[in-house]
Length: 431
Image (cartoon, rainbow, N blue to C red; front, side, top):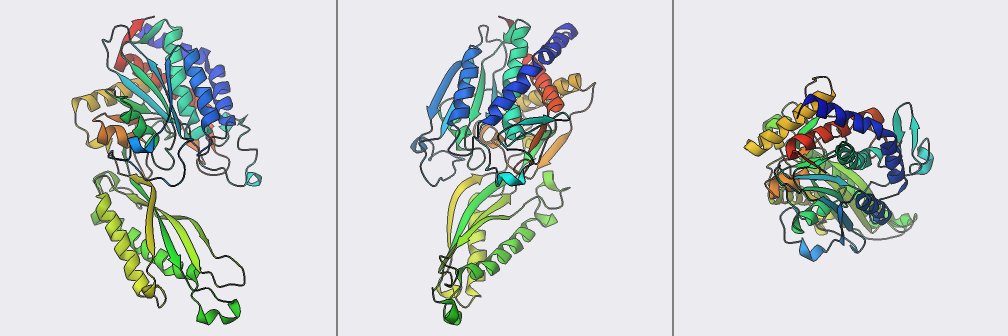
């Protein structure tokens, strides 16, 4: 691509940037927590259609994906899980095809009084947009579409098929991205603009979710010594799980991509419920756990070790040895993925194209690599579709927390780099 064309594309992003910021604000206004994504997906489908993309909007059928590698078990109804994919078909087909993936679902916002401003009423302050999902990852969805807009404004389209995906379930299973694979959406590379500060993610951990169910013996609190407190019984089990976490994080067990990370695998007890009445010894307790896994770590072996640790700790408890805990798996059963281990020519070419695009936007600056202690949908493409998945998105702060925000200038740079990457990877054809 010549310098003049590159300059035109960069300027085209700048020209439409105010519209992009408004697009992001409108998308952020949709409270697309799990089960409530339909309004945001309607908006995405309409925006894709307005750009002339062929729109595919469908309800995920669990029975169609539960047999596939990478599937994560779900609890509850799934009738509200809707994916949207916009397809731009090339006329020449001379380039390399591409998936531009992003997730529409956001995590719960928590108590609104703990935000400085309403989480779904986005505001811009000092170059940052605040709002739940603005960073994770609606800014990325915006950059995908507006990168294509910049090419169109210059009279170009990608010279290969491009699939713009807006998926659900990334925050709890990843089944939205899996459903896209099951539906036949494949390409030679994927780009996912998750908010990791314009770094290229070259390794990510896996994630396993599970619940631990405990049952006790109810009694009046006046006779608590004759009962068994199911909530208190959870405490030694949680301690045992943290011991497992420490062992997995030991230097001799770390994946090479995380050798420099002090504590790459994190266990989180994210939710605990139990009991029925303040003056009754609680008869039951359930706590939810998230545990990280290294790339290449066997999922079945990890489950077996978790169950063994819980059983051993339970047998040391006077009550639990007679009522062993039940482990129920739901949500993430996500394997780790390391793009950095993909030595294929396709992966190296894709990384090289992104490096060049990033450098063109950042005055020749290097594209830094990053190993992250979270998971993304990249694993589906890299592990199950033989497709290198490049995670590269804007700078955001407080994602999953209060006052989540995304840096707008970073979103601009990512949009420019994405547009140049598409032009290089796919090639260009005249509209």
